Length: 238
Image (cartoon, rainbow, N blue to C red):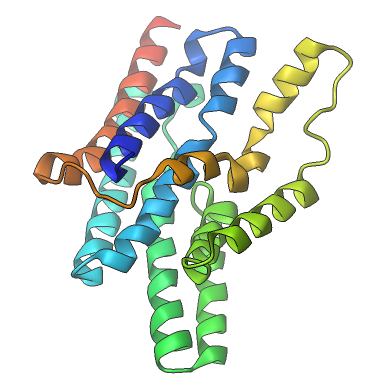
């Protein structure tokens, strides 16, 4: 599959993940589980974008611009339209991706090109600390760094992700019944982040696919828009 095709598939799964307000918890847990690849696949394509972009500066500007625009839009919509706190939109993954891209630039420029390894490590730790303030930063940032370091060795990259997953997810299968296990698995399936996207990344054929202004900007618009729409509808009908 091309990058564009995979991104549209992930956008569909993203919607399933965010409609939990309207469906029973069993289905919400199931949808949450099957949508676990979304963030990882998009994070992977940020790494791919960093490797192939003609201008890292323009790429970073786009991520930061839409990230801050979403934060301001969410504040306005939460404050004046949604109003009910339980339906507030607090997601900020665009800024997490932006910090991840900044980390990739730091790693490449200082660690590899200028051989300033200690400075690079210190800055990477600071950037990682900042990413913890945003959605998924605890996993997305290291995922992107590992993907870049092992960009030419997918087997070693995948092995590292599998090891991380098994080290940090021993409680995924706890429960006294199939229903409890399913609910627990869905609610805590974020622990599968590092491996959830690997089958889809495997499907990637290395080609960008359809490339125009629509495909370039659709995710930046669709991501906040669908969250805002879901939040507004939920606050009105529930």
